[in-house]
Length: 245
Image 1: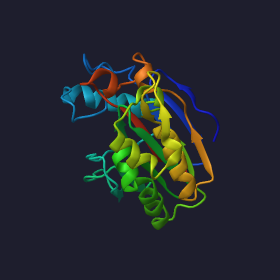
Image 2: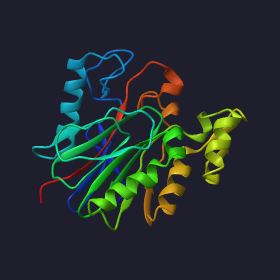
Image 3: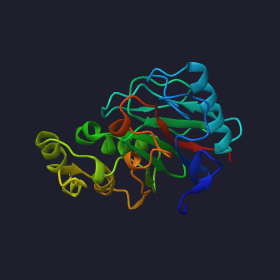
Image 4: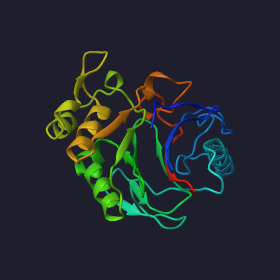
């Protein structure tokens, strides 16, 4: 796969073979403040009809004919579920070998991570708690169980170390496991580089090909939702799908 580029107003996407990966932004939807405009989450208080329309538009922009979006109830854990239908349970990761199921996570500072292979795809929602709990390794293990091999990972936009100061307890929990996460914010405070930590975890889990898509969600209010910046807000999407051959 190559470097992601614009796909319409809503998506950055990449594809190789039958796998398609996409990361959305906040533009191009119908939701109103504080969820304007392309919020995809049903759990933040947005109008359900607006969320449904935003999801429909994302699927149209993705360009996968007949695809169905599949989401889970995210809880900042390390559970990864195999998906064979349109419903998933409580989890922060999904994997499938079924065609035209668009595995989707909602993020607003956490890291969306897509896992692709010729036979299966996965999508992970990674915050610091899930990272420490081992969701990256759990995602790789789940993908392997359903036949995923020769995996490439895409680490999507998230809050940057510039804008992610944390207390000593959180810093120690993450950096103690993933030293590359240690950083300093623009204000000179102890902070985390979650994208670097996820990349380190992926390499440890055996992923040779990791593409990190730069961009700080907290720094770009016109492009991304950010809880750190705004508090009550919406979510953009990370998506992965095996399209029909």
